[in-house]
Image (cartoon, rainbow over all chains, first blue to last red; front, side, top):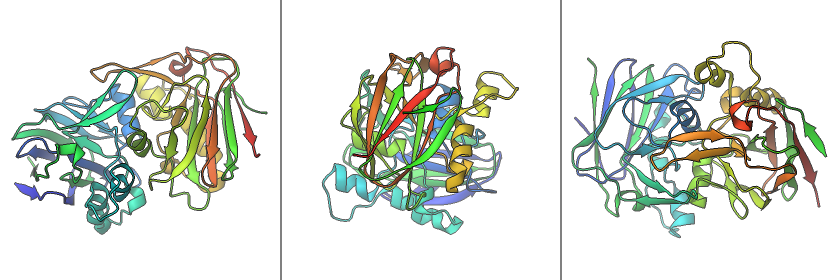
Length: 193
Length: 193
C-alpha cells in the first residue's frame, strides 16, 4: 500500500493488465488522475472522448477511460463510491488566485501532476483535464455547477485495470472546496496479478 | 460573409479585439470550434478550465472561453440561441466506427479540424475537446447524456470577441446525431472594428 500525503502527488508506470486501486482512507477526499500511453505520451486521457463513448457525465463501474485517439486506456472494475467525473480541470495556482482571490502560494493538483510527471518528459502544457476520482460536482438542470464535499466514506475505493502500458499521474487534492475544507491523504495499490 | 460547406471545416487567424460571428443559416446545425494562442499554439482552449471559471456546463453570453494556462481566449458578446457546451469530443472516424457501427469512410469534425489546422503546424494529437456551438446535449440528473437536434433557428448566431491573437478551427458538423439527421453549412463573419 502506497500513501500520497495530503496536498501532494505521484507518477508511475502501470503495465497493460495491471490493476490500480485508488483508496480514500479517511473519507471525503478527491484524487485527480491523468493517463498517458507509456509508448507515446502524446496519446492521453480525454474527458470528451470518455463522455462520448460512455454517454454519461458520471463515470463508474463497467465504464472505460478513453484516450484522445479513441482507445481504451483503463476499465473501471469496481467503484464503491460511484461519483467520479471529468467536469473541472485540476486545481492550479490560477484556480486559487482567480476563484479564491488567494495570491499567496497554494499547493495544487496541477503543480503536483506536472512536477511528478516531469521525469517522463511530460510538461505542464501536456496535462489534460483529469479524471476526478471521488469528486462530488453537482450539476443543475440549467448547467450550473457546485463543488460539494465528496460522498466517499473511509475505505471507499475505485479499482482500475490498465488496457495499455500507461504513465499515471495521481494526487491527493489540494483544494479546500473539493474535500469539505480538510486536506487528507490518498492511498493506492498496484496489483499485478 | 464566409460559408463553411456541409461536413467541412476551416481555420484562420483572429487578432486580439476582433470579433467572430458564427451563424447557423438554416437552423439545427452544430459548429465545433477550437482555439490556439497564435504566438504559442501549446496554449489552447480548455473545457475543464472554462467550466471551472464559469461554474457552468452551458456556456453563453457574458462567459469567457479559457485556455489550459488559465487565460481568457474569447468572450461571448451575444448568443441568440443559448445552448453551447464542451461535453463531447469532436466527431471522429472512430465515433462513426464505434458508436454508429459504420466502418465506411465518414467525414468528421476531427478530420476537418486537423486537416485545416495543419497549415499552422497543429497536429491531430493537438486537437482538444471543442466548444460545441449550437449543440444540444441533454444531461439527466444521473449524468446520462443524449444528443438531441439543436434548438437553433435559421439566423441564430454567437458573437465572440478575441482576447488574444488566435488561431481558430471551425466546422459545419458532420455527425447525423448532432443536427437531426441533416447536413447543413455554417456561416461566419470576422468583424475587425
